[in-house]
Amino acid sequence: MKLLFFSSAFCDPCIQTRAVLTEVGKLVPSAMIVELDVARDVERAEQADIRSTPTIVVLDASDAEVFRAEGPPTVDQVLVALAKAV
Image (cartoon, rainbow, N blue to C red):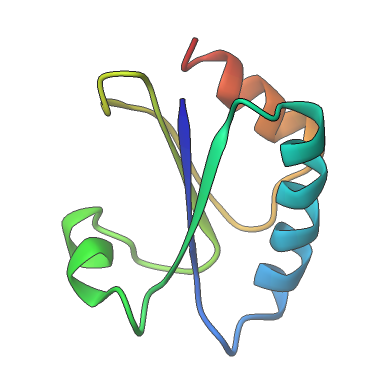
């Protein structure tokens, strides 16, 4: 399972999201968490149709999107989203 975290440098909620994802990474070490800055990874953000930051996209083993959310999540919300990818 893979979690894509689309962020931006000027985004205060992205700081909160980064902290949540750090905690999730400790709880679910098998989850691949990838942070993508929308200013640096423009093509990837456009392909994923990212409209705001932070946005979290969870992909299953075949890279199909199983969950998407905008705004800072809680640890519990991310854990539930990751469970959908299993």
